[in-house]
Length: 151
Image (cartoon, rainbow, N blue to C red):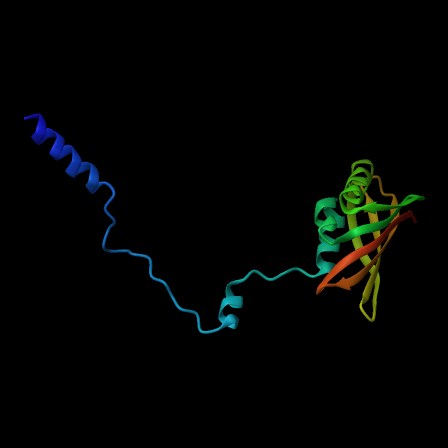
């Protein structure tokens, strides 16, 4: 009797691992890389990231575009920082000066460089002039310098 119960438990237990025959995953072969790109999420531009991040005070989003070293000048305190240090300094600025609005006033390009000049307005209604310089490195724009000064 014990043998019959053991065999039944074995059969019932192995049935739990069986895969259903209907609803199987169907693998689709893609025609080309263009078809694959149709499913990829669009990569936001540097300008779009800057606008969004400065409006919300998101230092991490801006730091994703920092180069290995960033010339950072915030309210008169200037230094050359590593990417992670620059992110922390920028986050500290946002902690003391929570943003309410940001807009780009002027932008331009020169060879492999881009620059943006914007105005940041804090919730205390203080205005700051923001200047960002970036350089195309390895197919990606990297922020090389960022200046925030009282306007």
